[in-house]
Length: 261
Length: 318
Image (cartoon, rainbow over all chains, first blue to last red; front, side):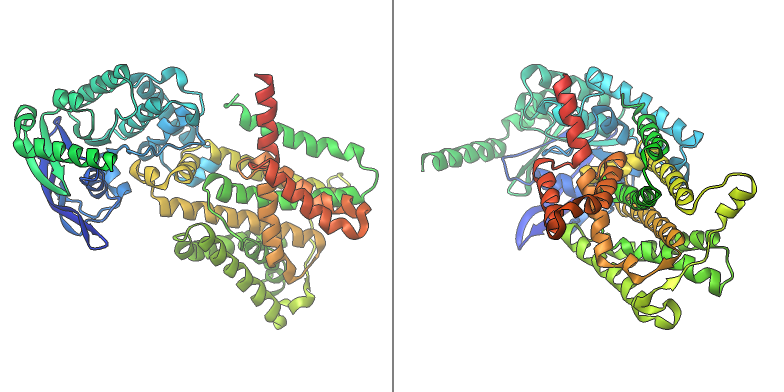
């Protein structure tokens, strides 16, 4: 039984088919990676699944329920959370507050109680702060808790986004290039973290350019090119697939040409 | 440091309000003080809207007008006590903010600014044109609150200006306390989150439209109570309270002092309330100097006076 089911998903931007007829499925605890050359439509696909864009065609089902075109905050309630390729950090907050903000669904209550700082409101805040500290420790940011989020390095901010997304206690986690801008050590840490989260039963959908990482941790790989799915399968099979090799080499050849021109 | 910032702010505010009268050479200063507190209250509401939630309104004087005219009209037409009239005004402002906020908060940035501006102008037009009810541009009288007489009966004898200084000071401290509570609460975090990144706030489950509306309604109630206090202490009110200039003043006070900080915004209210009086030494150049000060602050202290100054002091200490 698949937890997340994508069928025939597609969207157009100004008459251009950005993504067309993409479908695949995620089982609980499975790590599925979406790979493809730049501009293949990976982030667009993520934005459709997470409710940021409304798809023109197709269907997204979460645990059997049709969630196509559902706004992100409703998807969050159903256990789908994500990180962003271009960081979306709450810049004016501390690192800790960013992680606490991820607990919104667990800590929200009446505005009245919050205004008067009633015991119920303080209890909710305290509980989410404790959980946030534990999550920061888990992603290796425990000691940076009181710093302003804006002062962290790029790699650290990537991990902060993962901590914030984990705060929802998601069933499905979408990670958009979590290792981008990270050095080898940081990449390995993120690698371990993702594997551990998946081992706890969270399904993970991953977009990542680090092919070594993708091949190492994915159970299943979906390859996109020009907005269409050109291949899908186990890492070993994908690495040998001629269409995949062509899509990548073709892209590299074009890039090389552009660089020459 | 972070944990105690709420207590520190409230202590500073209460201490300044309590100690300042020692240095007042005449009762006129009590009057200026209470005007600062009334403005400070409206501006504290704007801190919730602008500083926390990152939304703008150029029409909040409209809510001040509703609060002010509720105190003038409800006692005459409904026989309500002026204090209850202020509560009715706040409830009415909240209801109107709820109805108006829903459609206009879908807009962003200057679109929202223009839509809210329209709302403010609408209220002041109604107050000016419904002359049979509101007395039109000539304004109307507001009944006595009556609290001073009660205090006198139990042995606390304050002059009129002293009473309004103490009473609006107390209301301001309560308003600041509520706003600071909110800052550190789950609701405050949701507001600041959507300010930082709407898309990220959505993905952690924040119902962005709902929380923008919460901030708008709360700030409308602050403006309404501020308008009521102004009407009750002046015992007379004109449609200017709801006017465009008053809306602009409120936003300017908040931004100049530091819209992200309650204390900063109140400082902004204090400066822009007293500066015109101080600048009278420049005689005909008064307005020119006022404009110049505002421009210089915004050029050199973009975050507003208080946040910029504290950042500089901290930077030097480290």
